[in-house]
Amino acid sequence: MNQNPIPEPPQFANYPRASFGPASRPPGIYFETISEAWQIFTQDTGTWVLSVLVAGLLSVPLLALNVYVSNGGSFMPQTATTTAPGYMLKIFNPLHFAVSLIAGAVQTTLYAGTVRMGALAARGVTIGVGDMFYGFRRVGFVFGTAFLLSLLNTFAWSVCVWVGTYMMIAGGSNLLPGGAMVLVGLAAGILIAGSLTFAVVISVDQPVNPFEAIKRSFTALKPFIFLMAVFQFVLGIVMMLGGCACGIGIFASFPVATIALGMHYNYFFPTETVNAPIYIPADAV
Image (cartoon, rainbow, N blue to C red; front, side, top):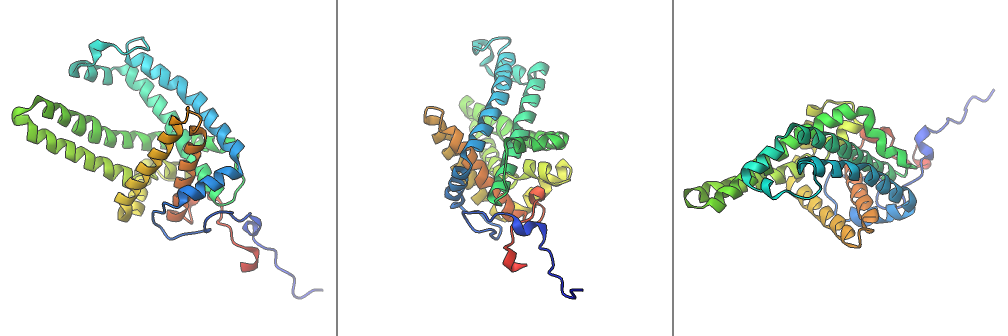
């Protein structure tokens, strides 16, 4: 009998090595991941393009319905609702509110699933279009997280920025308080964008409730709030440029942005992420 059997390698020893970028980085913001994400995108262009197409086919009808309801049964904006009172009535219209929630939940869940796809692709795991729907397994938690984030964003933008701007336009004694509200709203927006980037992805990928997802994202990104906000801004420019390219460029720019975020998700959550082990070379085990 052989006294020294050769141990079988762990399952993850055969995972393919990611071709671009290091397998792991310390937590931080790395702008070079944008170019690395492009190279990962080119390795499986068909899957990513099809994913964007499917997401668009699901999202555009919901957006159109939202516009139709918000304009009182018309796809054309109604001038009567452009005044401040009319705008507020439109926001608090129950049907408009319900449609907005449904559209937001679907879009956020697809977005979180796509970022998770990017995290998988960055690990060298084979991906498919179905991976973008992974978040619907925990759609209640994703919806809860997205709803809490929307409340924070509503406070930052719809209340502070919008009301503050309206006060500044009114002028007089409202000018300074209005300016202060705008600054508070902008600061809150940067804080939200920089610290809660991973909240919805965590709610998809980790078995936690919405409050814990927000807490984990804030704790992880707290030292990098401003840098992550800038990184998000740069990714926004990338997607905007893609959209300007006759609309076709979005089929590349959106995947590149989500892959870059997925790579960062791996760096900040290397042990919990995507329920798949980080690749370890066979000769290292």
